[in-house]
Image 1: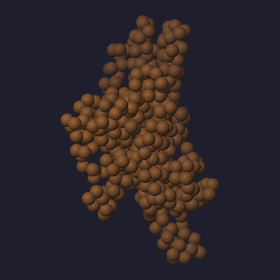
Image 2: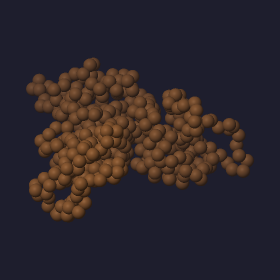
Image 3: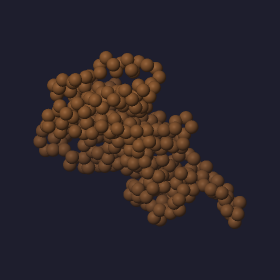
Image 4: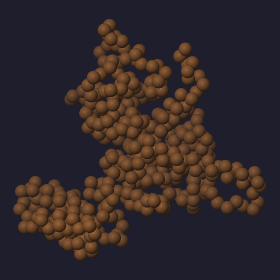
Length: 418
């Protein structure tokens, strides 16, 4: 059910309003005053029913999502911090200091699913709009990275062991007696420090035995209920080292193995993400997650289209690294890639090209900040939807934080309210 608005704006004669007790120059309060909260109300109100229990206020939920990314907190920690921090409460629209938790952490999970990728993109668009003309540059820098999932490093032994344990759990849930459960044999094999081929083969055999026995003994309705799980177990059991589209995690079966040529990390397990960043002002104007491990050059049409829709202007040039080679132009946007200068280039042209590509390198630390400051290093949200939402919210948090830092460094900031 839609959240019910407050009955009256009448103040409390016993306590001052929360906003009157806080520093009006605080950047977080300034940010709250410049965010168009009514836009979120209009867009998200249609996602709620007219019946049922009243929902939490939309501003509260959107504010918690923004604070979560700004402060690099989990769902549980951001709610606990909200109770202790009056600035957080004022940012979310509270008029009086609250002593109770605003919601359950799972409410944030349901809200993310409710608004979907489109809702997260709306928050990102608002963060870009705060920067005004600074977000409308003729030249942008584009680069890709890997948004890793929160999974352990996959090995055959780990995956097959999980298959065996889940087969036991399904059998226990359905009341099926297994001919052999391997409860005594498996721990002894796992205790050995070095897993030889013989041990891996034996564990694979054990997993196959349990899968086939469940397929034989499960009733038809129970087998239909566990069909997806059984198909996943079968894929893990049958896959080989050289296969494509392998399963690397049972709870995140869509995770991809991506190699970006890093010396310290040969393979990363997650999804490819593309970032578009204005060359001079440093505003993130594009963020897109891809469900497949596509070539970097093939991501440009979608990313540039997103940038054009958000900024309402088409960039003249996109500066990329050599990983995008093969593309010279996408639509009306020229693709600039570093290379050897032509013999006919003047010293001025060579100097300008060198400065342009050196500036492009500035997107690398931006990606580092997104990962280590705004929750992109490990994505804890589930599925492809979680990847898209986490990326868009991280980019939005980067833009919000940049706007707040610019407000503090502004010469008129100290005298704005004097």
